[in-house]
Length: 351
Image (tube, rainbow, N blue to C red; front, side, top):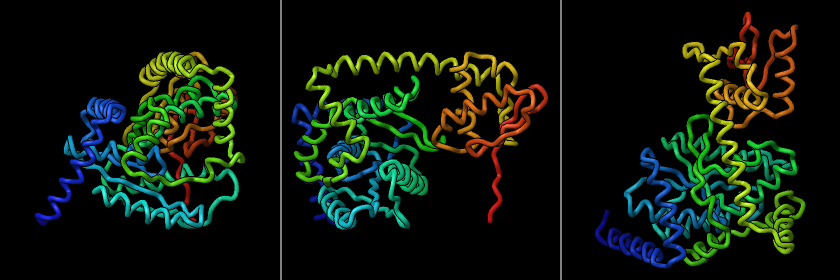
């Protein structure tokens, strides 16, 4: 690197780190850094940058972490092509970040776009494209900018869907797994949106405004408005957070027995990439079986999401039947084997 370029880079880094002297920013960064340093396996990681204030705040914190801890970080933005000006926004974002010595790799969602269920499909596509790329780039940790407000929104969305304990609390987890290959971290899950907006404006004085965030045709926007209305009616956020944390503790207890059930009552056949489930596997309390089975289905079927609860209950009813022989679910074949069951991957023929 040329001497002039090196000097400019040092100046940029110094200016970025100077913002950590701000008490609010410094406190958020310290919590962010401590969380990442707890996991000694995190030597490098990827950042999903949407261009909104949340992801730009995350981008800044990650950049500071890389400077102070000499970590390798890659930044990824997806041009979803859902808005006419999305490509222009992508170019503006890349140019802006370059000024801060941040090189953002742009990905493009090509092909036909959905006309319904847009947000859900777009979210899955974004994860899929970004994760495929970071696997190619040999990263196994992805950081997202989900925050406290997202946690509350997801809690109410899942409550309205009739989700069980696992669904109500899963978003409260700091980390999750994607296909057993990628660890997804939410280091800002305890930070509120206003603080992230403060960081984004303080550092970049810019963020991409997504008009869909104001569109009441989307359920998430309606839920967001509902939460704001409940706040006006006296909703105590501290008590809501305490409730979610208490539910999470109960969820952790159940997960302990789920793992125990899998460990004691199933056998993984590595060469065949299959699981054998013994009779005792299904003699546990319903909730334990209901959670144990999708864990195995996801591993064998190489899926990120659990099968739908309705489909899982139907499968459990079929397994209890005397006439049960074989069924497919989540890319797996579940087949009776004497007094046990074997689960192996469904091989689909190429057309």
